[in-house]
Amino acid sequence: MFVIGYLLEASAKVLDVLLNIYLWIVVARAVLSWVNPDPYNPIVRFIHSVTEPVLGRIRSMLPIHFGGIDVSPIVVFLAIIFLQNFVVNTLHRLAMTFLR
Image (tube, rainbow, N blue to C red):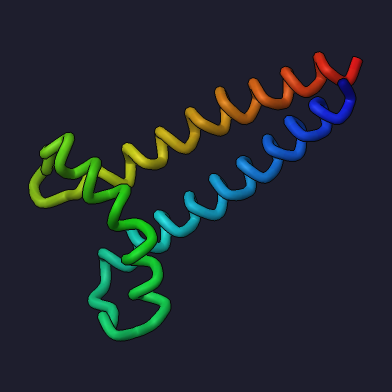
């Protein structure tokens, strides 16, 4: 059963790292929205292509705009924090039950 425990522990760590990376990409997208970046820059295009599917879906589900301010990155931040605190910690605890 220890193999399942180590698999769950590794999955929790990988998921946590991926969520942290995506969080920073969303932060970069929010910062880029404050300036006028070159739309042909490969980094700007990558950030836009990675974040737009999630942010666009949230914008369509929650059409809330406070004076032109886009709140979809805030919703993504909250979702990532929830996933890190609930799913990742649950996987850690579940892995510990198999490792006992």
